[in-house]
Image (cartoon, rainbow, N blue to C red; front, side, top):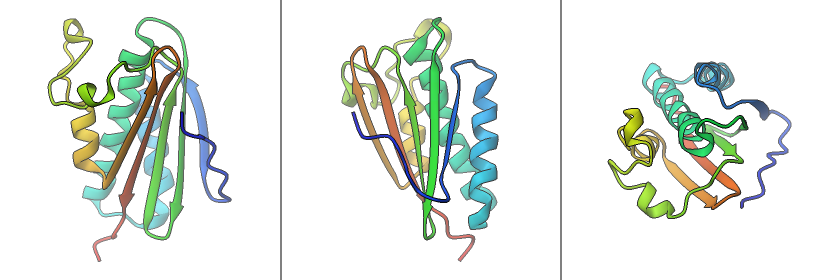
Length: 148
């Protein structure tokens, strides 16, 4: 999978347990980090929602009932923020199929299968890489205009 380390002087690297209550933690971390770019309320909400979906996918689909670690990284380059979410869970057998609206491997847990669709809609670029048994890497980019 993609080389995950974002060695930038202003970037962040946060590791946390794959637990449902940490989804809101990830949203707060990305919100605090991106404030330096003076995002609009819509841009901020979009990015928080995309991160929430990526982290939820890691928790629900990557680890299921198992314990695991999720890595959240972010860096800025001009007005663009890059966010990466990585898990070391079960991986995705067919990424293109998983990105289809309404596809889910956890239908019994009341999940709609819209996670990647939401990530794609709320960011400017989405890359998903996964290896069965190794984990999943999600990279999202969002241009922050700050209302300009």
